[in-house]
Length: 589
Image (tube, rainbow, N blue to C red; front, side):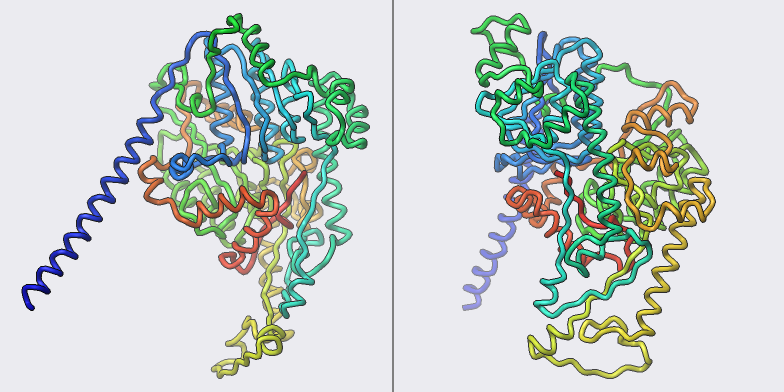
């Protein structure tokens, strides 16, 4: 019997060891296959860069091995990769043009769209061509396509052109039904995030600010498209009022939105003719993945100077995702900025902020480190789709702030929320809670009872203090009297164009504009451009991929725009009690 147990135990241990060994070998083998599948791209003569924009565009994209292994059709692309690829295509003499393919769903923030559009215009100004094709253009896709030399539309397709709208979820009635109330504490007339939980419709102040900034953004879109399509903003507004989404393709052609109606196979023939390629010959094309693997045709810099781009993307301290490209973890950001501050080869830092805000405490800590960094070397902020509330907090200490006209920024305000569920717990569930305490307010914030007036006053005072500190930081950073700053604070959201007029930002433009300013202030001509935090390699990404991250990407693919509302609720459990965040998770359509 003793020998039997020894043999059995030895067998189990052997199986476990073998399993571990084969798992490691499998991971190494898969990683090897993935890495070997992405060699450096060799560009052939007479090539076209096919920029197929589908799925979702984010600020930076960390490659997910699971997507490659499972052949996922819902793709995510990084704005950083798209812009770099367009620049490389412009500089490469073997690439003659760009073909924009919009035949599938495409979602992208408005300011990111504007950055891509500006890069495409720069490419076109170099003397190369751009052709766009789509079966059903979304409004954002058409905004990009409008820069093309030729906008081609499928004869059975359509162009979405209807104007902008902005919506928010309101959960008060749902919370009432389940017996939960949100106890709200805030400063700022326009600080409207809490309306999601306390109201059933927009407050007058929220409606006023939202109408103002979507009107500002729409005016920018009209101006840009009008200039590219040789139309007037008034004509484009009339077309939007008629809602071109459901009009015939012939109407789009007649009204100047499209240049030609052709099928995809006819477009291929057109491209071959443009490139002087015989009909039976193969057209040399490069995908976005190919372009990412094309080396930049620039001489290696030997100066030792570095211009750093540091990406701060996502909610501040409300995400547990370990991926450095998702969420702003204040502790990690502070350590990274400290390294850049102490690195003498780094001559200037461009802080790329794309954040709706988050934890007020975390924002203050990052503000402190940005201030220390600014004392050592130039710090330029480049704002993406959002740099609002906490996103503006971490930006305001910079030497110079650059925003796109369609960036959403400002929202200088503070709020706090404490749930109270006595109705749910006591009456609906029949659960009763009792206990003892050593001090009068020892059980403050318990969800099984409403707060008393003393407790409410304490939290409101904490929120007030946070607001005073926030506005002080902004006033000092913008070299503006505090009272003047407070007049444009109050939690109000501004477009980049409006913020420029109010002196909340210094210049309108994209990341390249910010880089130019950083180089000028650093007083250098030769430098190497490096991005931080560094992306993981494929093996590390495979080992660190969490099931939650993959499931989230599937949910986003399934629910589309509605996913962001669910994600907002999910992240509340990690949220700091005092928040400096955009009024709501805005989805502009």
